Image (cartoon, rainbow, N blue to C red; front, side, top):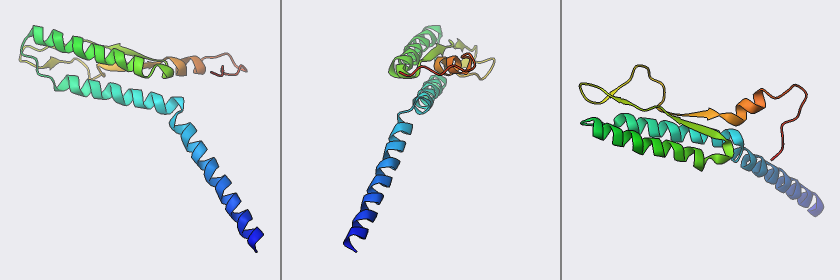
Length: 128
């Protein structure tokens, strides 16, 4: 009876350790990190859109400040090989930002994902 209980406990421990390892690998994976970078870029875009510059000088300062924050996302998430792009806003005549289309101001290009998607057929992706 004692041996059976010990075997069940050992099996439970192995199962729990396997599940914890799988969750840890997923949380640190490329796709999870890239999603976090996209969320950070979206928050920079939302904060930029909330700005209400009074004149061109204020607009230039806001563009410069948020452009630097967008570039830092690429540094912070360098392991994802995300390339940040900043699209400068234009001051509207009535104040605020003039936007012809609603593309994100701070966007990320998925360099690693594109490289893996277009690798030659039959080749394995490189292991870091």
